[in-house]
Length: 387
Image (cartoon, rainbow, N blue to C red):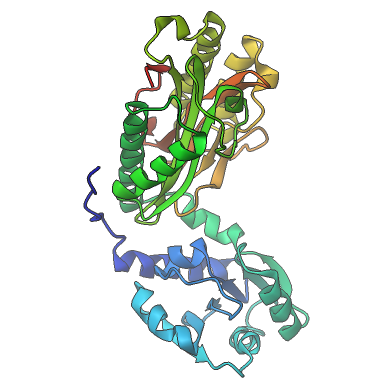
């Protein structure tokens, strides 16, 4: 196994400056006193700083009418300065200081010229939120996602390139696993190999490796177990992680024969898979600017429902992807929001017969100017392998 070069594009520093400026504009337009961003993907998106989640408060304060300030513990200051990709003022606090009071003091600058509404990032620990609320009596609290979703949902060209590279790396790992030995190994053993190969292909994080064989393939989020893979059964392989901070997530369904044609897929399974493939291809083809997210879900569901498998497809058709593996937009009934050029998401219908077997096909798709741009190129057809 060779290790791929870890080189990949980086988001330009000027892009982080633009993102902060856009958030500051939204804070003003929405009459917010401030947007308070804790450790997590939102902070990474705005500044490039991937801070360590700690009981010590690290927080970006984007206060109305003020320059952004990053509040960090004194012992984290060197890491913050090294991690920031844009010029942001840093305010440090010592172990005996009150960091929540420090943030409240920054927010107080905007009180009087803005409403008392404060937006906070969704990943903020409740211990920090409760202390901030105690330090800012009378404030109204809302989710910063209301503003940040407008920025993060639409990916720029650099983000899409990182998603493409991540997807291509995951494709290579799927092919490597499908081309290797599977029969006689446990799911856990194969999952370990998946993670090793994702890292070798340039991922900095191998986040998940679903290896669901035989009846376990009917469990969409099966945890790889000590079950031994056998000839004459399917394997749902769902893998992903992060490359350059941006996610990969792809699923392919295999059938292992042990080299004996008598152990090939049954006609029933071939029919089930043909229905699934038609649904996945049709849902992908439906992607275009202006179509409702729920309409893509409906496209896949209509085909699966029409073949009598409706009750066996019991999850949404897709989820957004970027700095998080699951983020907006979600392709699900009830989401009437229109897709826009640059949105990136999975298209992954599945059919599951409990106690018997299941199948899923998943690609990452970008909404292009005229239709779908598919970032995974590993064949979607049922792959029958000796294993």
